[in-house]
Length: 109
Image 1 (cartoon, rainbow, N blue to C red):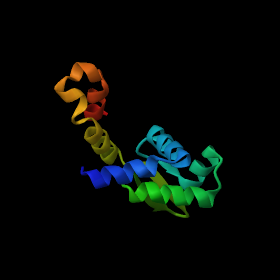
Image 2 (cartoon, helix red, strand yellow):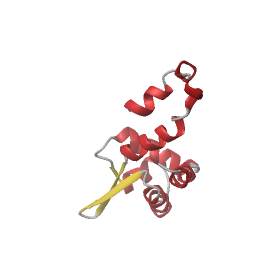
Image 3 (cartoon, rainbow, N blue to C red):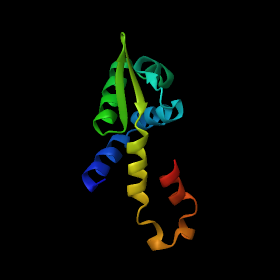
Image 4 (spheres, one colour):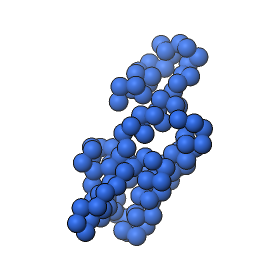
């Protein structure tokens, strides 16, 4: 991952609605959720939720697919791992005991 990709992902997460949607999708697992269910679960109007989900997808944090009339979204766990690894790759100047389990999370999540 490079700086530009990390900035794009972090910028996408820097909004309360998008962060809540991303966290919901991380919890939902690889099968994801329909966009309408995400909007309903977060009490966000569907059109506004679609805008936020598209922003997260452009930043590569989500993937989407159509199933009939529904669009499903799921967290892109590989890209999430890459972002976490990028953020922690220089953690603690080579002293992993300072970071505790944070470094382990980025490589095993």
